Length: 178
Image 1 (cartoon, rainbow, N blue to C red):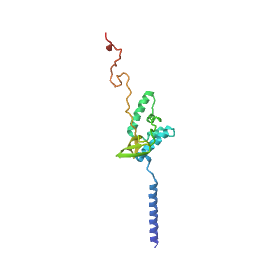
Image 2 (cartoon, one colour):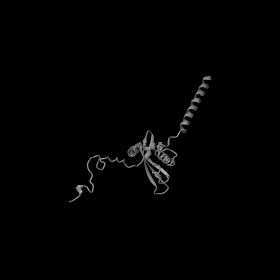
Image 3 (cartoon, helix red, strand yellow):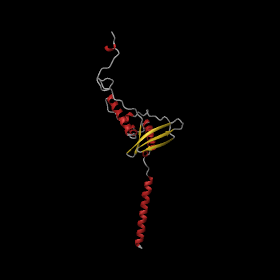
Image 4 (cartoon, helix red, strand yellow):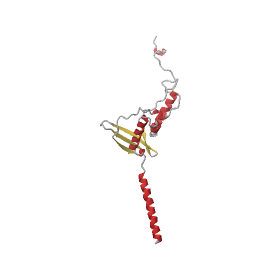
């Protein structure tokens, strides 16, 4: 009889522990960037907060995908050469440059492997945008549509292409006729 009550107590204790473990796991939330839509919401919120100075632009930079980070790193390097100082890639994100063109009403995503495209729809029929994302270490990151970084022209080269030569000037001797 004593062993039966011990067994029941042990089973009740195990059931309680299992219930607690199950209940606690249900209370945890996935991070916002675990879904494409959540990553876009997070990015827009951080951009808005950075524009008002509430968060540093480095917090926004951390939400960007590898292609965008590479592009901004190239831009920072180029700007640093011009200014003669080190510039952080996050400094290439000007707070006022990426203002919302419309308030999002809804978002839908089209995931494909480790990439996704989120279609953002506003309150007017003409208000739509597509945002490309890539999954990196389990989190979706925003890939901005930025133009390629152009290299700085080299001194002593024609048109900055890296080849040496002379450039034609309207008053050069080859352009003058006797």
